[in-house]
Length: 123
Image 1 (cartoon, rainbow, N blue to C red):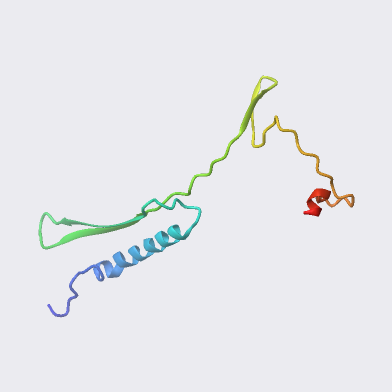
Image 2: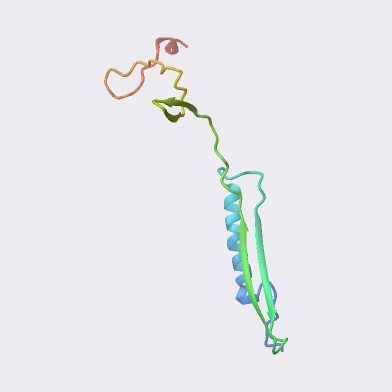
């Protein structure tokens, strides 16, 4: 029996369990480093190896390898909206419709840039 390799985590399915674990670990690392993901949520890697002994010969066992991760989801984004009934229709706006727009002078050259107000230039 010295010609045979004993099954271990490193050798089962030709190293498939380790390869799959490493692939999921890369996903976990990327998820942990992503600033858009929830910070305090735990990330999990599940490596499952299932075995089924043969009914005819218990020395022969079928197996399968599963490996998957549970990652943190993208962090939520929140803000407020202002709602009103306009013409009998419900509408929502990001800006407060009761606050009039402030008049900012526009660049006379027509480039769409806003001109600094005199008070801002002095400070």
